[in-house]
Amino acid sequence: MEVFSLLIDGFSGALTPMNLLFAAIGVFLGTAVGVLPGIGPALTVALLLPITFRMDPAGSLIMFAGIYYGGMYGGSTTAILLNTPGEAASVVTAVEGNQMARQGRGGPALATAAIGSFVAALVATIGLAFLSPYMVKVAVRFGPWDYFGLMLIAFVTVSATFGASPLRGLTSLAVGLWLGLIGIDQLTGQARLTYGVPQLLDGIEVTTLAVGIFALGECLFVASRNLIAPEKPIPVKGSVWMSREDWKRSWKPWLRGTAIGFPIGALPAGGAEVPTFLSYNIERKLATKPEEFGHGAIEGVAGPEAANNASAAGTLIPLLTLGLPTSATAAVMLAGFQQYNIQPGPLLFAQHADLVWALIASLFIANVMLLVLNLPLVGLWVKLLAIPLPWLYAGILVFATMGTIAANPSVVELLLLVGFGLLGFLMRRYDYPIAPAIVGLILGPLAELALRRSLQISQGDPMILFQHWSSATMIGIAVIALIVPYLFKGLSRMGADED
Image (cartoon, rainbow, N blue to C red):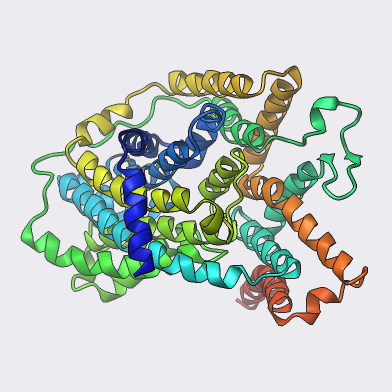
């Protein structure tokens, strides 16, 4: 019953005119950027971080959450009509959705994606509201050694999950950890790695790194590829609504996709890509008409899209209760919390209960807004695909630079922004993941603090990390997560050699 009363209080905060406006702006922007190929919610939130620095924390975080949900919705539109996923999680949707569009059934494909997204996000947000308090009760018992073990899991799993290889992910993480060392040591007060530059004493701003590595890096990468005019989208023919047969074939995949996406999204090594592929494979095995798969099966759109949106709500559980981001967008949202000196974790629900429950309540509101926006405005989203890419990315470049300078007017900050932009370009060029660098900068100082406090308590004995079953278990999980990708790679090579 306590959750219901907290949710009611959250709705009273979320339903204020300004917060409703922020939610509407968020879902509109999120859907728009989800539609545009190559521009995801992580980039959009990173761009808005400097702009929202002086805004009300609740309003800006509600807007960021709306962008996150909207981006998951919008990615399906370009995947279906253009066969170009706006988000990595929409790759599977493109397989069947684009085939449906080519057969003149683009409308039902968009409808099952939108309704499935609504159902999944609604169920998953209910799960978020009711499971978060239990996670908090567990997390408040953590000691510094437990937090270090938890951070270690986050480092390893994020590095192993993102990118072409675990080694590249760990390299990206190392860059973020090194950047996190710059500034004043939190325990001794000594300057570290500042090289005599006074502006570096406060450390590297997460917003500067996020904007540089996401926005500027993406712009430079797109310019380097010398892209020609994009492929024209397939027009939506006939009714956008679904037939009775479409409903019959879609509702079970919606529920199965939700059941797959939410728990996987809540895992430290979660994310949206894995559950979408799992959902697609399950629907193909359970299909009454398996011969349609590969040629426009509606189940192949309904299930993965539900899994995609359910996982988005799932990622907010470790973010809000433990302060652990499990996706690139969650990592940038964590930076959004920290720019207001708010640290997500178990104390968030005690110290900022009004904010966190208003945020959860706003997710229900944003979900309804997205359903209302998506189907009637399909024509508008399709027109966005006609924006010339040079105009689009030039605007992002200007917007990113102006926003960063407005938040922190400094020549050093501008030079850092350009440097991080070049770093982001090189990482994309050589296929190094970006999310681990952001996670390293955000969580690195927290992990260092937890480790040093543990060693202070034990008078320098590192065995304290293994004397508590909880921290020893988490360190063991991190080691397993680090070794398993290499074991699988070695086994696959052995199998290839035998063949």
